Length: 88
Image 1: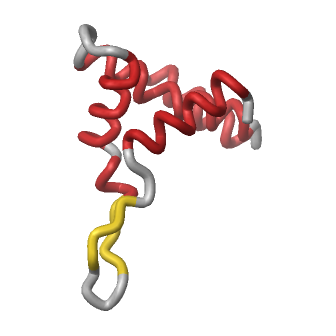
Image 2: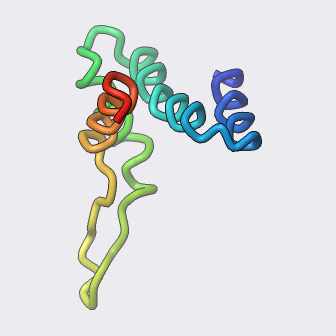
Image 3: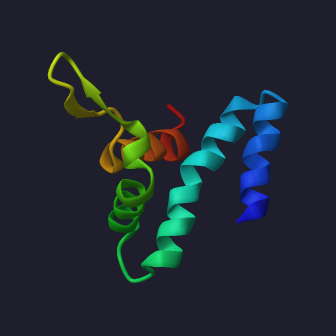
């Protein structure tokens, strides 16, 4: 895992944004497979992301501080598919 994380950081350091984004989007795939190898790719990706990352992209907004998820596991999986499979 450390090599993957270093690859993301190195790509960012050299401003290789596409490589950094691609590697960052691959990490939940790898981690999800390690945690739950028998689920489908989408199921394990979304579950891993929602368990470990969702809180980092959730904030209270408005006067009542209503919880808003800015990037869910499903959203991130869709981004991963769009970038890695279609390049858009």
